[in-house]
Length: 418
Image (cartoon, rainbow, N blue to C red):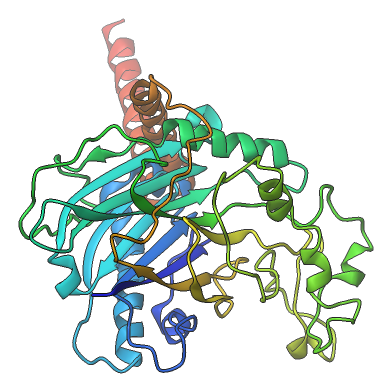
């Protein structure tokens, strides 16, 4: 294997089930013409499910992950491979953010160890926003050395004016995303790694910038194209399809004020990371409301209360030579477009891996922070389940009925004793 062929997708699911029939035909649109299926497919998901199911986790998330897994296998079959070409190797989630890894069996057999990490940056450090990561070690020869690669799925704070908050979210992720060896079973909603012959486990309690590995960060990073919300008439100048970059409605004009590019240049976020050139229109915020315009089918339908922006991004460390970086077909279930990147990673040990220094030290209390956040997630998830889901409503009604019946019975018995 002179190189590892990797394929990454990020998608904000808008808390809805993914539809394999509509996503699978486009899932591999970022592959170069004539390319074979990649060795690894990493799917970064945000808002993977409603908050009740996301925070409770386990079996509540399984239907959502199953739909994504079905999408990957169907996409591979549509690409021309009738056999199931991928092992669903592992899935990790933290709150509403998840990461799913699919490997070709021949490559998966070389994986010697797995580490995972999660850090919430939402309210009370919970996982309504945050990041989840998986790091794997590939054995390339008979030596004890492994080729290490890290995938991270992230979701940062929303709204046009919240650039400082997004930068702070990134800092909190770097401080609290601590990778530990996968030695204990995860919840039933998460796929377990299929290790063929695990070697001695590497040192754990390491951060995102741990030296000697390739790192990918994919997600709804939420950086916008404007620092203030749009005015009522701003939508008139929103990007629309046009062949000429000189047209005032060409999307490239919005790209000039992209917040993430600005913050990267100023070294205020995603320190040391690179991104392939963006040649596709904004991925957010699409509107699915019917339009009265006669040319609606030829126009991009944007939500008027948000500036169209490239919220959904894939970055990497160290700099690599990517193949194709593009958005995928818009899905009716979400106001975000999926984004995909295909890339070859040289396996030559002489090739440079990153030497970037972590911009922030690890939080020594990261584990206590994570445990406290998880307790809050369970409480919020349980309350949300009871209040916001039909099955939870039924449980709540049943509990209330039992309580009322008990009060009535106690009152009747008390009255009889008088």
